[in-house]
Length: 380
Image 1: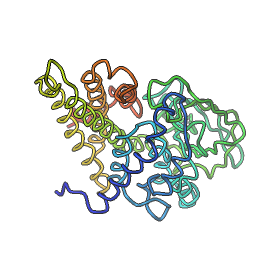
Image 2: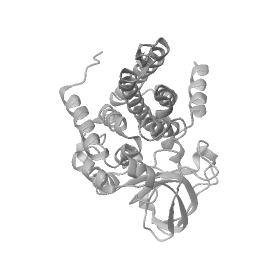
Image 3: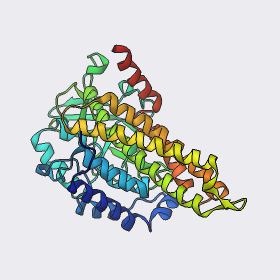
Image 4: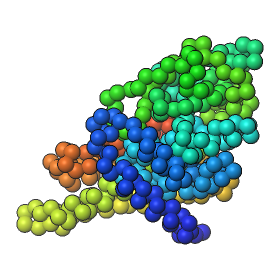
């Protein structure tokens, strides 16, 4: 087993970090305070091959695979998680098209996203059903050669800035619950689609989040992704792969917390000695470093297995679960090490503290990951 990056991967890592430092730095405070989404950042990222990099070159991506996507996500998230999401989540929803879509769908929807010209969204969560994906109520009824879609979606990334979305809908209500769903591509500007931005988020405020309403939205049946009735299984597999990226987000944010804290404790003097000379300080830093390295192993091994066509979805759930836990721990430790300064915006750690919590919530709460992992362990 080789733990070294290839030369191409090293170049990708360095390029992604330089991009984030150059393009993110001057906007972080503004986007956080004003809940601002800046499309120009995504467009520049697309020009540099950083959007949808996991997609093969045949469909406009960089062909970097899951490991390449982890590298990009980790490096961008070191600088700012919210702005990183504008790049890494610009292709959110495309995973389903890439995995299950027709050749025509792949050629139509994937290249513009990879170029940074368009944005996709995954319209899954509903006001009364989040982790409980089997509880979704949005309906798609056949009408001639079309589907008529009615329902509501909530907490959708890119809701008000996307060009199209992949929506989970009930198409076969007469079937058993898990066989009743289908994934359908819906143009964001189709008649009957209404979007509303959510304000007042705790963190990742540069990332666009909103609610979507479908009222007699008409789309052709050719927008069905894969086979009708397979939507639930497709969505579960979708999350099995994207959870690795949540772990990568957590890895980048946690590393930023550690690096900033080390720098601070070297410079800060307490009782006539550097703060870093005290054992309790060293304990916090050590715990952060150990968790980060353990998380790195989980994330990269899960990505490596996925690229090798031998995915371990339990490992993906572990990376997501431990990633959220690690990010929250490291952000909290960073605030504590900075003392009063950690509580004000003179230092970035207070923002990272706010950003970190979402990593325990979206794409499956940490409790849901425990249930997933626990079931597999008991099944033997």
